[in-house]
Image (cartoon, rainbow, N blue to C red; front, top):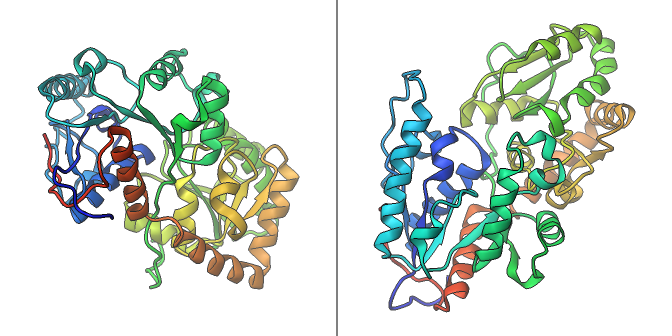
Length: 388
């Protein structure tokens, strides 16, 4: 991590993503940065939030926000939490006892309080620009992202694919955008108990299913395989419950009852779902990175991915790929992995090796070095991580 500096860097993270995310890749990213800072003592980090119901904070080793009535369905609860956190975060920024601000999303309310102090922006994807009809933000997120990208001292892109898209779509100078890959879970060598009630073979789908996630095309591609094998299932982990349109689509394809939903699995339950699946399918038409790819690798599940955006960059030679627009391509790729046992075993081993190339320790080390570069400081040395 480089030699210790006399004055450790002081990094402030704001509240934004911790207001809304219970689970999600963005909040996991910042929790892991804070966790690594706490473990390694470099740099000194603070989280400018007083309240959060984010699950990744539950076992965090650093001081963390209090839970906010997590068991109560209180009207406009999120708005109350956000108001408290925004006020506290702006107070922390106005206090000015930090070297660099790292906002956790694209809100711009911090700008008037920041003054001349620098901030670094992470760009997670360019979905709001490339597929605006899926974002539900009426263009506001894209506008704020463009404004912050122009004002930031530096920009982190979580994949080279996202970096290229950001440079092209936001007109950014290439030297302003640094690719720093995310990390993933450690490779799990031991076998977990099978998920309750899932004794039949299944293909795993993880996360949200709407719009560019491409679940409808995936299900249509899978349907002949489900009809041919009476035991095969599709298990959808996380995301919302099936809506009326999804249930009707399954009926129309004659696969109703063969597609199951597991709501909000814990990290341990999700690991078991991966480990006992015949394959993990990720048909998304666009991903800024694709954390589930690393999860599948780490937990010993063959990954069958869309050949799109960042997924080949992250999956490398360890995954199999299909055309996300083609039901036949999806069906052929998954069928091959389901029934070619030597291929499955080779993919599982290749996936474990690939997973070891991505770690949160590496993400944090490269991020800290970039922080230091942006403020003209030496490489970060030991210092305790804190909250504001």
